[in-house]
Length: 325
Image (cartoon, rainbow, N blue to C red; front, side, top):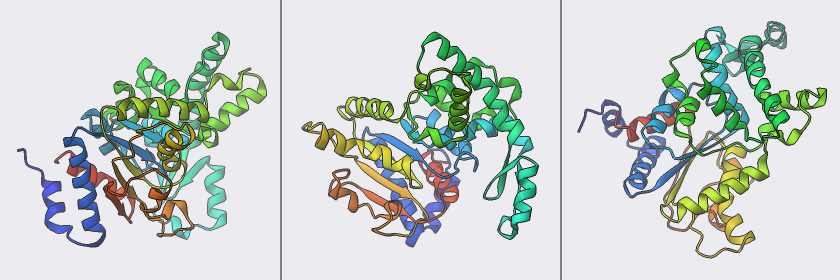
């Protein structure tokens, strides 16, 4: 076996509390894959701006991730970082910013995500011009696509290649596009590109808002994928953060069983959530996994893990463990 210094470090040092939970979750991830299972990953928060692609892209290439649900923001921000990384600005003292400091960032067209500012022109408007052409072409031809399919098409066309400012191997979306990875992006409308698409429709540049397919169709497609894959393999659920990225896909199981009234629906076969949300039965994102049993999402014997920490720290460590780095 190849040397695995990160994995060895984790095993030597992470013995208790959240560290032990991290190890248990990583072992469970490996056990699922070694048992012939597939892993479904969900991305909330600002994981793409946090450059999770540095580790996630390799997980995709090595077939350790088999489908992804993400927010519209994570979908587009991986591409923003890909073409505008050199123009990003880090604000390490972001906790000390005054409202006037924030206004000055706005005037410089720098959109702040915690300690990192995304440049409006170099990132958002650059991609708007490229993807806007695809919207208009699809609208004229009557072609309808999901948001991720449009970005897959854009990336695989090579039209952005001359603009790359990071190693493309660190883009998880490029890795996903190259694998034709199943992708589900609920609530895309609240993302920057979702807002831009609405503006194009209002202006009349795009005549049919249905040119970009939406959430109900994503759920229908997820149901088809889940039934097909779970018939052959157990499927795990690896949730980074909370919100719609996790809430939307996990509901496919009770929907199939309780609403479609199908028999023999397989529950999710592994569950892990990395979150800094305080454990709470009033906050869905902070609910402990056992609560999901009552909703028909998990079984009593499903391996369940919560790592209550910063996902920008925990997720790359678990990925390194799985990759035996």
